[in-house]
Length: 626
Image 1: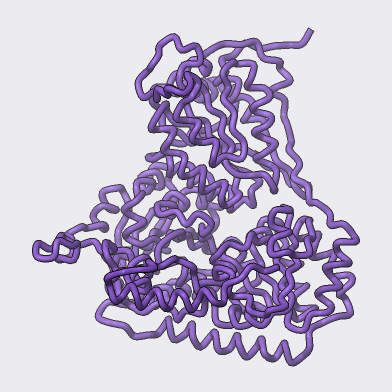
Image 2 (image 1 turned 90 degrees about the horizontal axis):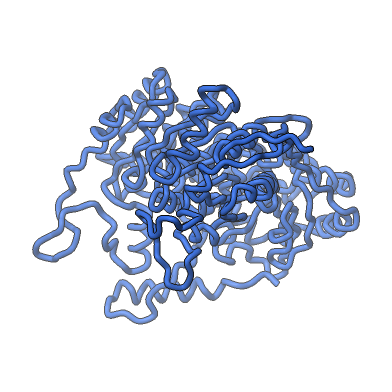
């Protein structure tokens, strides 16, 4: 007879999660090292009791971490997973109703970025003994519909555990998806509150130590031959390194491949650092906010080797950056979805193994020396552009690019800079000089305002040995700053660089370029005469806010003051916010790409009509790569 143990569903889940491990290349680690949560009705007597019991009795090693916002705890978990190359993540539990649905934005971010996170939203009574309960959605189409069904669209796996025994297949399926580099993303197990507290006789084997092996798919030899044949025939090839190159740990192979062949390497946000910024083949970020060298080479490229990239519109500059009419793509990717994009020759494989396989048939081939020389010339010009941005001498308040130059100087190669939204990602893609694959942590698949501070928590937990710097604008800070309290309570030393310009610099500039005159993009009083938000600057003191949340605060209104503040922040052992004032209208790096944001086709405003004409001109160069 099978040995069993009587536990509640929540107790069983806690014991199960504590015994899950991942393994790649012989290295094992905890798959779920802990649980983030905020308790309320729906999980306080279920998962809350189970986590308490585990901590008091020692029956399961699954630490609990208290977040201040449900979306924030998902962001922290995703940042942790990103730092750990998708081999570990956290579980997140929230109360019934709004607590759970607060996690949906985080779920969308995780799935869009293809990063694992386990979500455990509390659900209504499975028995419907009390119906409707507080915070329950009553849907006239069906009694089994709850707000948690909203997770289905943004989860890679969704299940509702309506009976205790359903947890066994559901939990195992959840681990399968979390550890699948192709299918990973948000995994949601909705847990009715009565089922969490219900007892069941569980097979003891359900709780045995399980190791989920994360393999490296091997490329098919004929596919390698086809890809190598295309590359050998190229005169102006270009590599686009994406996140897959980093998650697979293919940095050494990529650098060696680029050095041997002479193919220049451009990178996406997720791929930055796979090749150090000062490597002779590194040409910088590509696409809408890409660097001069990368975009110039992209316009000429006859063969593009994409490595672990999903080719977002920012990477392709909305299908305009690859200008050669005969351009051909070879895509090395673990996911066939991405491998076949742009009518490519697909090489479905792990990035590291794929590069190793390609190196063989290309061992005696390299680009023409004149192409290497052109790459060097373009890199030199790019460096001049970057240095000009760093030393623009704007005043009286500094330009944002000057602050980035000072921050580059202040941090060592292993320091992690975190960002997600606003004007900063575009500036960073051109200007940040990453030499380490984990040094550049910019979430730009979902570009979620509010990600940054919470992500700082997860990144620091993933690698406490690194200096973690959260780079956040005032707009994103106001969306979600409360996880500063979590940094303080957990004793995590994080530096938050809060760039204050009293508005949305990115959307303001975009609005202006689209003929919308920066409408609604500044933090201002309403002007009584115009009725618009164009009055005086609001008396909002974000530095005082950060101090009240428990952080140490330093102030800067010049580049020199910022440099001094950064040295103090680095020397501190406490979470420190460096509040720096910049000019909302300070110059951004020069643009070398385009982004497709439609402009009103008809308008009574001259500014909009002018922008529409420019938009129509850009559209002429947009095409599918067939």
